[in-house]
Length: 296
Image (tube, rainbow, N blue to C red; front, side):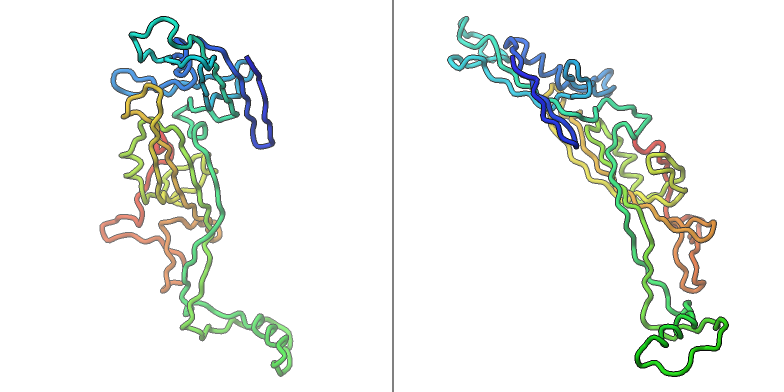
C-alpha cells in the first residue's frame, strides 16, 4: 500500500513498508515474521530466521503494527468471537512493517563470532610491590638533585653509578598490571547450557581461539555473567523463551622476556619476581576450561 520508506545513517538503516492483509492471514504473517524455535523430540533444534524485506535481504523484520483497514468496524483476526455474524468485523488489516539492518539470530553453534556481540576495554589492576626488593638508580637520583633549586655540590665525574638500596621501606610501590576487559553479549540464546556457564566461573583458558585474538593459555579469566530472559508472543512454550547473556572476561597482558605472565602467577615479595604457585595437593591457583566448547 505504501513505501518502502528509508531512514539511513552511517550507523545503520531502517525501512518501512505498509501491506494490505486479510484478517485471517494476520496470525500466520506474525509467525512468518517472528518464527518460534523449532522443537523436535523434546529438544530445541534451532531458531529460524526472521522474515526479510523482499529485494533487500540485509533488512530484517524488527516490528509489526496492525490495525483494521477501515475505522467503522473492529477486528477479530484471532477468531475470538466465534459466534459473530458475517460482516461484524473487518476482513482486512493495514500492516506496517519495520525492517532494520541486523545481525540475524540463525547462528552457527560452531562459530561463536556468528552470534556474539563483542566490546573491548583496555585497563589494568594495581598490585603492591614490596619496597624492600627495589633499588634506586643512582644516576637518575643525582640528575634530579642537580636540577633542584636546593641542590648543591658538583655532578659526578662521568661513569655509571651503581644502584642504591631503597631505604623507603614503609611506603608501598604500586604497579599497574595491564589487562583487556572483554564483554560478550549473546542475544536470543535458546536453552543455554547453564551447567557449563556456572561451572566455569573463575576459571582460566587452557586453549586459544580467534574470538579473543588467540590469547596465550591461562591469561584469560572468566569473571562472571549476567542474564535476563525475554518472553515473546510467538507461540513458544515458556521453557524455550530466549535469554540474553552478558559474559565478562579479563585478560592479563604481562610478559617478562619470553615468559608470559598469566593468572596462575603471583608476585613473590621474597623473590621479587613473578612465580607460579601450587597447593600442597598439586592443585593450581585457578582451574582451567576450554574456550572452544564454552559457548556452544
